[in-house]
Length: 222
Image (cartoon, rainbow, N blue to C red; front, side):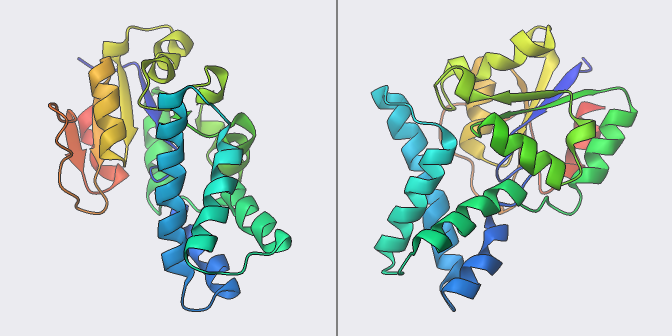
């Protein structure tokens, strides 16, 4: 069955979260990659902990808090100015090389496209515009509207409500295996972009399709 729409995770899927490394490296020579990894890991952990505990704060605050923690954990001196510059880099993250072309091809085939992301609307709108993707995307969906991060069902429920179609007729794409599995649990037709050649998370199910780049989903959804 051909899907009517495809929703994409944003961070790590459409946008390379580690494109902040160059800026981090300019501030902390030799430590940029380590900072980026620690920052991203703690950012995700905070989303899960806040949702489990019912203590939601938006993704902008979570990302800033995770940055502060990462710098302290690595003993990197973080001034207010550097904190602001690194956080602002999330508004202009670089897209993966093939992504604009893939979205353009799907859009050209009449597919309804959207994002379903932990990011705030302001973060998503800025990043999509910076990456040259905004005109290709019909729906920009942020979990901020429900105050629950993925993999909470309330977050995934934003998709069918916006598209106006049953969840089984909507594709969901993520580079995070846990996210693709969460969407599978909810009922989406899912595709995992396994850029890092990582093992499958042991969570009882697996995504409907898997590839190494976004280009691999063209045959899966069309």
